[in-house]
Amino acid sequence: MMKIDAFCHTLPRPYYDQLFKLDTPSAAANIRNRVSAIPSLADMDVRFAQLDEFGSDYRQVINIAAPPVDDLGPPEVARQMARLGNESLAELVRSHPDRFAGFMASIPMDDPEAAVAELDYAIGELGALGGQIYTHLHGAAMDSPRLDPFWARAAEHGRLIQVHPCRNAEWSDYPAEQRSKFEIWWTFGWEMDLSVFMARLVFAGVLERYPGLKLLIHHGGSMVPHFSGRVGPGWDQLGARTPPDQRADIAGYQLTKRPIEYFRMMYVDTAMFGAAHALRCVIDFYGTDHVLFGSDSPFDPEKGPGYIRATIRNLQEIGLTEAEQDAIFRGNACRLLGLAY
Image (cartoon, rainbow, N blue to C red; front, side):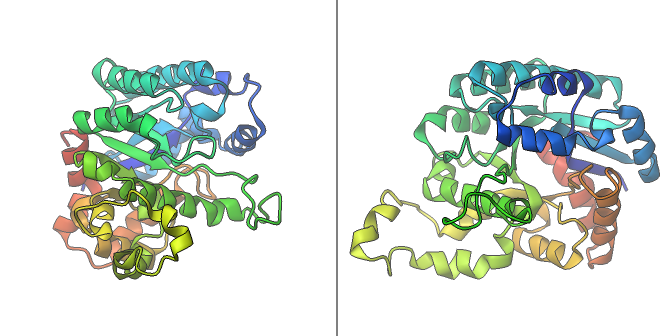
């Protein structure tokens, strides 16, 4: 059975070299140090040796690993790094079609006009399958009206937009503290990031205005499938218990469907890191037509093959039919990304 791994990270060598030359802010430097310890992000010989385990019917859809380009410096730097990353990704795909099914473009979201232009260039000139964005911009919400031109163009293209979390240790666990401890910012904080991103786009009406927008949420849609009772019946009561002095917190909320239906419009991957029970919950909530095989490689303890192997095993052991497995492993990616496998 062909397997298209739709959410994999890399740092092409030209991009990698430039990334480590930049004088980046502390938050980006933290993430940069973490990725520096994973050889297969940049060394394709190491990566391909790892991928041999999965045979000739396995392909990756690759993107640029964190930190986001917007965290690397001012908008001009972000634009330059996005272009370097996209052209380098395109070259990897051209050179290794037996390994890579395609790439998702890096987008400089801090400059909405540049974001639209780079998405157009990457899809139209470089052959990108879609784009990758992050859950916030320097701590600011992604439902800002200034980003509407990007959402509109992404919906017009009809391509998937991957969504990746990006908080760091400077986001404390409690308001009384200055920093997050024990990497809680990553284990739980990134899932909060994804869930908040989804909710803000839903309640701000982004999916109402742009129903053709296709978002691929990392980590199986994060908290949403696991807390669907709160997302569903809970949010159906939005405003019913809100005190008068907090009514401004829900101002502008105007949707034509139940909130949970907008969450179900999004697509998710299978990057649950070997937790088969959680993956079953994700599929039960979203349905097999909205779930794409995605491993989050190479961020496993083995620094490459571990999450791929675990995710394949999970999908084969949780009671899916052969047709359901094929949809998740291959069919949905082909339909949504325009691939012919």
